[in-house]
Image (cartoon, rainbow, N blue to C red; front, side):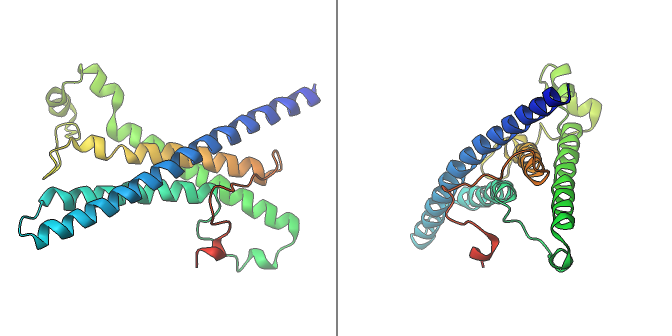
Length: 205
């Protein structure tokens, strides 16, 4: 019975790592696309300003592009274990204590992701907007939540579309943190991601 439980937990952890790898591949393509888009927007901004006909929506689009890049990059860095860490204490600990510390850190990141996901659910209140038949004005009048009635200044996009990056980040961060936790607990061997050229935190500096 215990052997079956171990096999079940191994299957679950493997599926979590597979899901994390899938998310990481999607993030890699999104990062490349957004970086290319950002370069185009910056060049377009330079050309139009020097030409005397600046496009003001380009500035706002660039800002949102950077915001999405930041959150997606932070999620990917979590899975690649390139996030910042203070090792002053763990450098002096034994192997077992280091494993416990790493697992505790991954568990803390998982709790952060789940807490952020819960906060986004309360803030965006998808059940509430569905209950009002997707009528943003009625929803705002009852809940005083004006998220679905606001629009961006120059692009005139719905604000909630731009801010979707927050629940997306919370979800992907949780998946990556859970995958890291399973690796730290020894339930699955650590996987390498050769498609990312940066392999460790020292290579970033």
